[in-house]
Image (cartoon, rainbow, N blue to C red; front, side, top):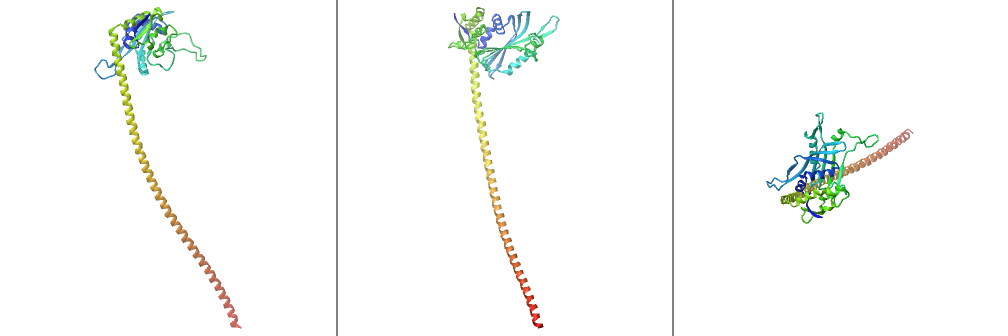
Length: 348
């Protein structure tokens, strides 16, 4: 039988669904694969402003659902703390870490043992994400720390409260990855989030009640009831306005970011042009300096050439003097010979 249900991707519908304790136990039990027999909600609604306007519609409510839960186990019962967050925006890791850290540090997350000692409660974390984690075709991820023997790498099956209380189990529902995946009962249940079932009115999904195991019919009826609630419909419209406002802010922010980037790039281009101009002027000065050095080198070369020519003239002069000295010497020798001959002639 086809029925119309309110779209639980809206925070107001998700909150409406989880306010029914029977439905909340059913959903959480199906996700964690354990039998929740008691579920006590804690204060859970927080509002984060996305504008400084006084208009109430300009605020975004982020639901952090906290529960104290009693779970039936093969050995009896155990008490745990369940943290549930639903985020439609891209995953805010810092916010999730901060909130999870707060759960570990919360002094109220304890149980009194038989010997009146206080022991921290084990923490389960469940996240509904509107954006996938790039792990395709896996609508529901289960993260559970495994204990291994380091030497053999075999998994240690024995349990330890010390390990359980210092680590937490985690389930991640990737709403965008549901897309007709119905491999088990959990995926059948979570198909109420499948956005491919939306009608023209995005507030409403079309589902076939017969596609769900009978045990899940209370959840279908709860969402059907939400679809008929005027107050829920009004709040969904308000939520649409919030998201429209957020998208406008993102677009304006993106436009401003682009304009700022253009301004920065223009400024950088101006700075680069000024630098290029300075480099060009510097190159020109270097070129002029090189020219002067070249002219100076030419003058030095010319001077050296003249000195070389002068040295050559002096060398030629020295050679002439040397030749004349030889001629004079030869003449002196000749005169001496003549003198000797003349003396011989006079004597005779």
